Length: 186
Image (cartoon, rainbow, N blue to C red; front, top):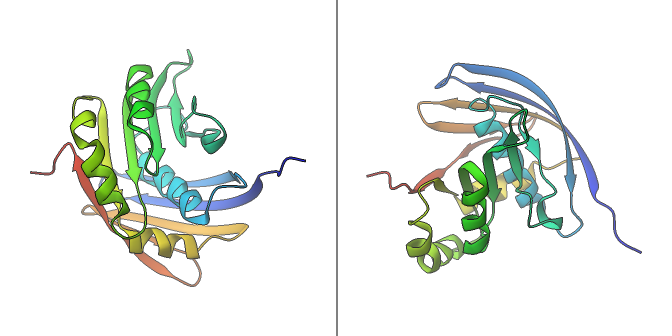
């Protein structure tokens, strides 16, 4: 018998002062049986970061259960993928395919220790040929603190100001550190 996804409900308040975007979202997030809280909360972080840029509502994809869908995406009324958002450390080929299918592709990389650094060193040259791709890295400390916030009923606030990202719930407040890998921040 196949294991079923665990459903999480999230009330997410986004205050993106940098973009002048303020909204309350009610999210239903299905966590695949093999997905960690760290990955699921990174998907919620991605929603908070990019919902203010979207022309159409962002949707959660099938994620781990499908290579044909990202963690999060925006599609226009014709079904064209305008924004493909992936999280984790995906295969370079998946990102290349995503660039062929979408107008814009963003990766929020995360992982413990030096995992992201090693993945970036192995994939940087191939990924830098993808003009539609942006790669950002969430610090290991930040992704673990976000994972600790995971609960079946989430009440979260995300504030973005002067490039700083803060996530909070009733008990914790976390500054989420995100480094720009590509295009380079030089």
